[in-house]
Image 1 (cartoon, rainbow, N blue to C red):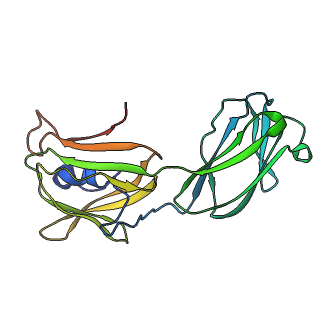
Image 2: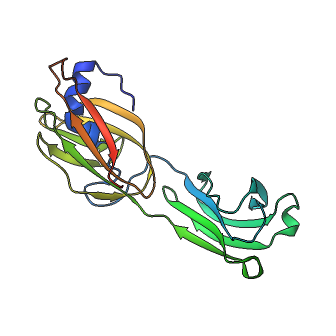
Image 3: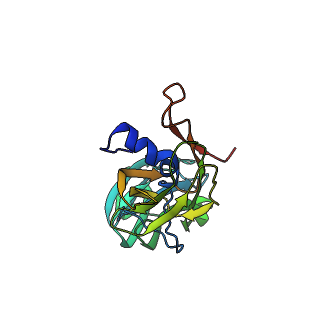
Length: 225
């Protein structure tokens, strides 16, 4: 996260918002993603199939993918796509598997080759949403609101000692503004706040604004063993 405000002003805002700002859903339950892309990863789950190359709309995007590999997410524009799998090095014309899918912005997908080679098939999954809660343990930080830049308010009036409920959100990247609840003034903005898919987080605001011996910090931790 990045901000251009002074340290003290930012710390005051972050007493809650450093954690709450990572939430990607609005107060009405909709999901607001700053990122306009869809994300698709490929899984090779056919145990007797050789290494494969993967083609998206005719273009080679992955090469030499071995059984058991789950790729990183590929960024795609929203729309309709055709995914093809061919033995490594043999070209698209040798594809043994084809699957079509429509993908949406701010959403994560897994396209998998499954089954044995003589009955190979495709599975297209929509990956689970991320969950996050915000926990305010910074005793001298003020109450704040958190909003998507040029978008809706996510949280209002979160004070010291408050812990939000877990909120399901789409994984993605968010630009967020922190506002003092009393005045509505924006005191910090944070660009490129990213949450991974299918993950549950707690974001803890710790320390104090005024005491350099116990400086303020925000700890984002995964709540899964």
